[in-house]
Image (tube, rainbow, N blue to C red; front, side, top):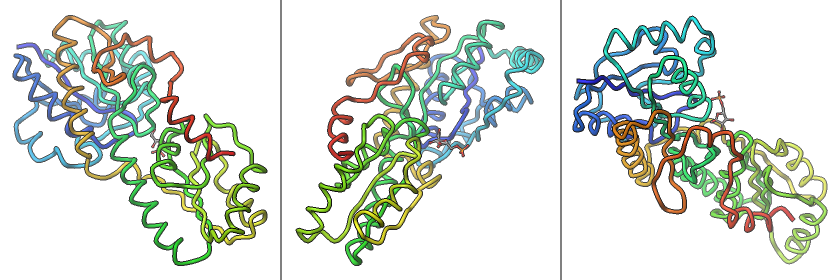
Length: 319
Ligand code: F6P
C-alpha cells in the first residue's frame, strides 16, 4: 500500500481537524496507507510522523485549532533539512503528501516536490481568506462567526453607554474579515486595505447622525490597514464621543468549526485525495463561484481577489 502523509502547516484555522479526519478516512477508502505528520514542516524534518490510527481521528471533528499542531519552520528552507525530510518519508514508504495550510506552506512543499518528486495536494486553510485562486479558505466562516459574536457583545455595552467602539480584526494584509464583519454587524465605519477611505466624509456623515440622536458608533478596522488606534483617537477628537478600541486578536483563530467549515473540509479532503489519485503533482484545492476544483500551484503568485460585491458594499462605510 502506498503511504500518504497528512499535515497542517502555518497559522492554525478551524476546519483543519475535520480536514485531517476526512483526508485520513477517504485516503484509506481509496487504498492508501495514511500517516500523520505532527508539528507541520518541523515534523517532516524531525520525523514526527506515524501511521494514522482510528483513535487519532476520532472525536476531533468539532475541535478548533489542529490536533496535529503546526509550525512556521524556516529550517525547511535549508537544503539539508529538506533532504532529511525526504529520507524520513522514504523510510516509511510515503509517496504523497496532503498539506492543509496557507500559501507559504504550499510554496515550501512545491520546492520539495521539484527536488524530491513527492507530489502534494494543498488544502487552503487560513482565516485571512487571502489565498489566490480560491474564494474560500478553511477557518474563515468560523472566524467570521467568532467576530460576529464579539461585535454583538460589544454592541450590548455600546447600547448602554454613549460611546464609539473600534474593533480590529485579523487578516494580515487582507481586509476580507473586516469588510464582511462590518457589513454583517451593521457597523457605521469600515477601514480595510482594499478600501479608499475619507475621514472627512465619514465625519460629516456621522455628525449628522449624532445630531439626529445616534449615541453610539461601531467601526471595524482590518489589522492590515494599521488604522485602529488612529481612528479611535480621531473619533474622540472629531466626533466628540468617548471611544474604546478592542483588538480581537487570536480569539478569531479559535472555536469549534462551523457547519460550513466542516462541509468545506469534507469536500476539500475528497478533492485532495482524488487529485493525487489522478496523478496531479502539485495542485491546490479551490472553491470558486460555488464550484469545487483544483488549480496549479502557480496560482498562488496571482493577486488574491475579494468578491467585488463585498468591497463595493463596504466602500460605503469608508466614506
Ligand atoms: O495568518 C493568520 C493570522 O492569524 C493573521 O490574521 C495574523 O496577522 C497572523 O496570523 C498572526 O500570526 P501569529 O499567530 O504568528 O501571531
